[in-house]
Image (cartoon, rainbow, N blue to C red; front, side):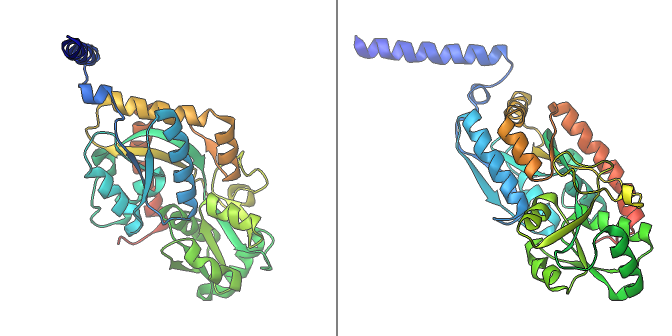
Length: 327
């Protein structure tokens, strides 16, 4: 009798779960999400500034979701390896790409044949923060502000050089270069860390870096930060002047978001969005983002996707202004 009662109870529970799922217009599997390990995809190597941010959110979201979250690093090809990997994953919410919206949008215009259409093959379902790239020089460099750097680079002509690694940094540096009337030569590195020795040794005159890396190197006493690309000073880095206030009309505020494969069910994307928004409201997270030079950015899935579409359109103009040849 006990066995029969147990079977009846199990069947009743299953039917109840099915009924709830049907009312919500989702499958039982979706209603139970997440039932297995979730992967956060990072487009940069372990230990990089981006990796620090992705792992922070993986840890915080895992506690709210009640699920194990691992970080999988897939660097290379201007972040397209990670983006394509996510777009081709099963659209079930178990693979989440946490990345710079600006960089992945810019790749649509920098590459001759982008492997995916970011606005169609991926769904941006949450925003994380607002941030901006920064112009950095070695701590012992003679340049105390952007005016001094610009004067020195004009004197060097095409004998000057600067380091870039990410799409956003490359575009910001190129726009600054044009606004300043410089002939300085761009040198591409795979990661920001790869250029560190060249900056500190003086082999590179300056670099254009994401705020996580730039601020960490400033705290370590290796960098002096001369300017940030946002239209107004960032709340997370109020002491760093904007390029605009120093006379260079650069307006490039960046943002990070969470993306999943096209076709991921709405109830799942809404749940993921809620996880990130909950984390962003935590004082600890707000301090973490401020320490990384960023400000929290809360949105709905619809707002996040609309922002991505808008950013893709904007970056067509940015890449044209910067005159970056397609790769």
